[in-house]
Image 1 (cartoon, rainbow, N blue to C red):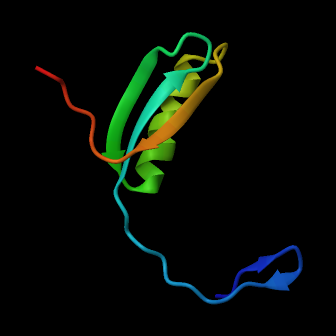
Image 2: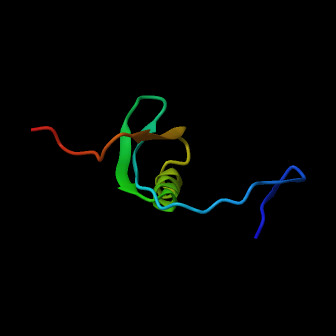
Image 3: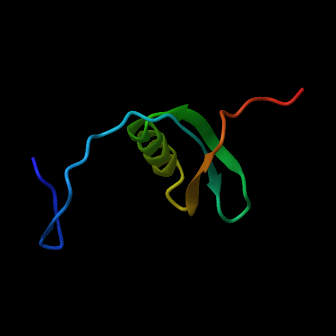
Amino acid sequence: MSDVWNGKLLADAVPIKLTVHYRVHAVDDGELLGCGSGDLATAVHHYNAIKAQNLERHIVIRPYDGPAHHVQ
């Protein structure tokens, strides 16, 4: 199936499986609300679940170069 954007045909492309490491923060105070690793759909689902619990807050999701882990 070909994709069309603004009436123009896009070049064919093959979807890729990619692991995203991310953290979700509140913009107002920087509070870490969640973090994880997974494919893009997993990250979006996690973001939406956090947003549903924090409707009054402006939150952002940021990619990182590796998984979150505790520093000893």
